[in-house]
Image 1 (cartoon, helix red, strand yellow):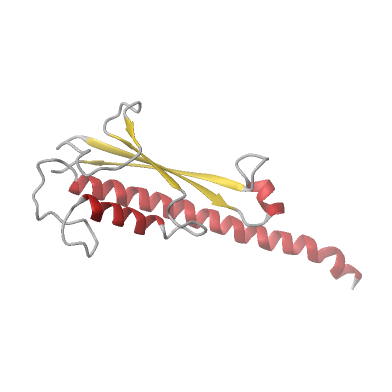
Image 2 (cartoon, rainbow, N blue to C red; image 1 turned 90 degrees about the vertical axis):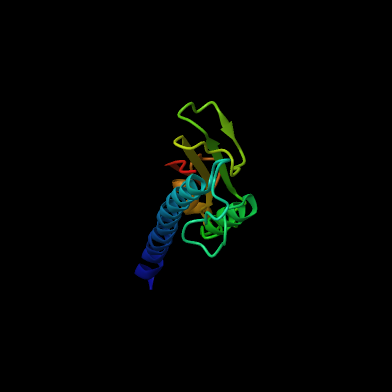
Length: 156
């Protein structure tokens, strides 16, 4: 009993730490995939001269429109563990000049042959204060900042 009482807290801390690290890795990969998919969708659908029958890739949406693109983005970001999608910050860059940014991805941001760059940031909650203290981005929070970047060539 004494040995269990001494070792159980350490073992539980290690187990919970592995679970939290697993959540961080899953969300890091998920955010990276979502950012890449959003950039691809913007590249396929973007541009003022697009064909009105162009469809979003890999979705059930019939055509590219601003409303369908926003729904697609929201659905992709809701898949992150511990987030509802609204806690993800997306920055859109029309060129390699990173000073030209928009907070809203509009369907006409892409010019044919140009590059659209997406940068996403997600505050991953760590759920456990003790473990979160060691894995947090800063000592004053129990969140970890996850970042992902993607780019796509505008096709329309």
